[in-house]
Structures are given as C-alpha cells and as structure tokens.
Length: 471
Image (cartoon, rainbow, N blue to C red; front, side, top):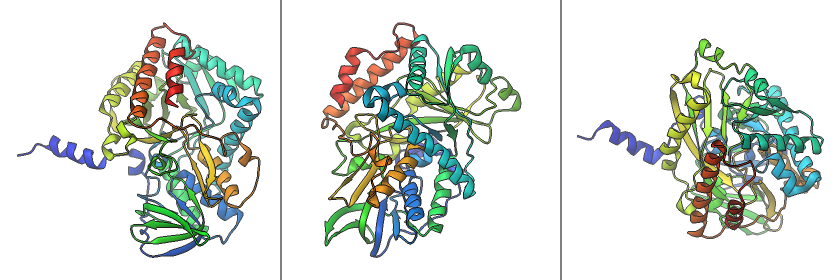
C-alpha cells in the first residue's frame, strides 16, 4: 500500500505548491473563450501588467473594446505569488541604475515608479479595493561591512540625483525600528508599500470589468498572426481578432519567438511563518510595517502580513535547464531549508516560530536586469515584461507606457530608459543554463565571503566578466 508521503510528492510534482496569497484571496471564476470575437485591443495575460494596461486604456478612452486572455486564472503567475512589495527598485540597485543609464535616465525612471506607488494607493482607495495596502516605507539593511558599503553607495546616489525620501540609518536607529542583532545600518526609503498581491489582482480585475473589459480565463494563446490589417490570436476554444495586441505574460514570454532569447525564467522562493503572538512581536518591534531587504546578491526580502505572519523570501534563485516553467519547480526544498536557517539567524528571538507555507514561482530575468517595453509587428503588438522580481510598482508604470503605445502617443513615459531599448540576448542552450548556474554559484560564494568579512561590496571582476558573457 502506497504511503501518504508518496501521494503528497505526486501532487506536488504535478500541481506545484500551495500559495498563501491565492488561498486567502476571493477569486471569481470566469469562462474561457469558446467562440470568435473582435475587439479593439487584446491583452494576453491578466496579471498586474495586463490589468493596469486595461485600467489605463479604459480610463483614457471609455468604450474601447478590450479583452484579456489569461492562460490560467487572474493573478496566477508572479502577480499572485510575489512578496507584495510596491517599491521603486530598478536594475540591481539605484547605484547600478545611475551607472548604466546616467543621471537623467536614472532619475526619470526612479521618479516614474515612485509616482506609480502614489497613484496605486490612490486608485486602491478610490475603488475600495481591499488588498491590505500599507504605506510603511522600505528598509534596505546591511548585515556585514560589504553590504553596508552598498547601502551607503545607494544613499550617495540618491543625494547625487537629488531624490527625496531617503535616509541613512545607524545600526541602533535601524534596530529601534526592527530589532535584529545582524543589522549594522540601513537605508530607509519612504516610497514603498506592502500589499496582498492576489487581493490586489482580483480587485483590479473586478474594476476593469466594471469599466467594460472582458476577461477570459483558462484561455492560453496558441499562436498569433497578422493578416487583413489586424492581429489574430488563436486559442484552444476560439479566435480573437484585434486592432492591437498587448503581450503581458512576463516569464511566460520566454516561450514566444520574440523573447525566447531575451527573457529567462528564474525561480524564487518564499516561506511564511505561522501568526506571531503579541509577546513575540514585542521582541522585534516592526510597528511601522516596512518592507525589508538586505544587500546580498541574492537578497532576503521580508515583511509583515495583516494577520501577524512574517513573509521571508529570497536567499537563492534557480534557473532550470532549458529555461523550463513547470509546476514541480514551485517547490525548492533546498532553498526552503536555507530560508529557515537564515530567518533564525536574523531573528534568534523567534527561534521557536514555525513556517506554515512555502511556495515559489518564476520571474522574468533580462540580461540588463531592467524591464522591457516596446512595439513589434509594425506597431500592432506591444509588450511589457522582464521585471526581474520587482514588478509590483513598475507594472503600474508599464500599464501607462502601454496605454500610450496603444493610443499612439509620445510622452515622458515612452521616453524612459527601459522603453524601446536594445535588450541583449542570452546565449543558446545548453550554454545559457551552464553559464547561469556557474554565475549563480559564484554569486552565492561572494555572499558567503561577504558574511565572513573577506570581500568588500564591489562585484568581483571575474564574476562581472562571467555575468557579461551570460548576457
């Protein structure tokens, strides 16, 4: 007789992990497309990018015929399983953003995403979307001297770019807000909120339907073609004829001919604790409910939830051979063990707290570590993707960019440094996976060396060369 563990492994292998956000968000099922339709704009993907694009389009031009085609359910991908941080981060850091795009490009990009955080909060309030939105700011902490060098570099960059809302904190000032013996200091940024991402996705879906959009779930795109002056999307149950199409599939864009060499799915993992008692919360503080990240290469990111849990994510990121996306990859047992260990190292006063949920999923990585927005097929196919794990707020910016693209408008948003940029291609398989895995191991070794006090915060030249080859 088969043991229960066998069946548990079989279920996990085929359906992946149990995602707390999806479990605790009300989802209204929608039918799949079962006939031919004709629309003005078809949006492929009903995550944050697709939903914000529909919202912006219908506010700008009421009456526009908009249909969203979702291969699974609203918020199924990264939009429903991320850490829930609406933050300004683009590129690997603010310092990298300035280095790679200059003062003007970096400042404009940062301010555009900061504006999006303000606008997201206003939209959530005006439409009464119940999604546990808390504007508590962000703490980017340093837990060793090398990480503190990175923290201080970002602070100097914020001053050089004349960006408001940044404050450099000492170790004692940091620990007064959130008490961990590992903290040497932090960079506090006011432009950050935490949110229940699946509730936001489902709430936003209801809003765009009220505005006139139609959402079809379990309707994956099988092909797209152009003839008769229109684009035609084939699905398993019907056909969509559209004047213009927006591709908003993020990691799944790697399966299309346009982006299979430009985007790589990287799996990142999250663990969630059981609810803490009041006594346990008193040992660490965290009354402001900031989002928190450290300055490792593979960062830890963590935040409080409305029901008194701690979400603890990151520590590692895995690209699987062939860049495949499979449900069984949602389980990363080796990473979950590392998350458990690093949580207890960071908060030894919570050593008796246990994790109740663990899950993972793919994010879209680009060679430049920047999102990609642009237009293909003679102006009829627009795309927005490649958030490198930080898409909650930039996807709102992206919705406005894609609105302007669809409506044929040139704006400050369409001139941002990550719009119509020339994105480098990744090498073909199997070289792509081999190089990615070697780079991953080098990054993890550098994190360990930084913890041991053997390296400063600069990237090792040999590692930079390897990453350049990878891109």
